[in-house]
Image: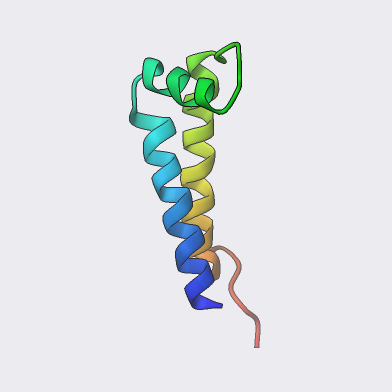
Length: 70
């Protein structure tokens, strides 16, 4: 399970960096290659980056937020 969690965490971290830090033109070019005709607002891309970052933090710090009771 640790390997899968690490792979997922890296995936979401790379997504957070891309959607949160890259310029809007790069986002639009990427979604155009995926077949999306109308590029969403830049706020959509930044929000997606923030969400991906929060998912990454939750994946790697799950036990801090939800400690196991023994």
